[in-house]
Length: 130
Image (cartoon, rainbow, N blue to C red):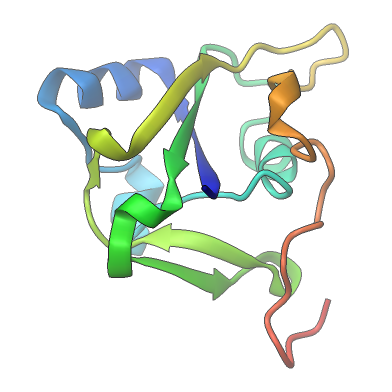
């Protein structure tokens, strides 16, 4: 079981729950796919794209349930990031947890996420610079 993660504003996720599917954040719709991160990448994703942002949720999704619409593609520094080229069916969601800010202004991840706060520890694309 491999989980991937989506950071979402709570209001956007509530809308997804209301309609039974997640169509993506504005950046996802612009890029043509839903951005996800692995456990090793999500800490840096939060720091880069959601610094200081409150009222977020962390959505854990079972990667295997997404089928061929999920692709791992090079992004930040050559890391392979999960991108979903489809609407997210909420049946693949394993958990939705609050993603609060700590006293230091960084997001506090669930303990069972493992390596989430470690930046840049994801897989690398072959032949890509670090």
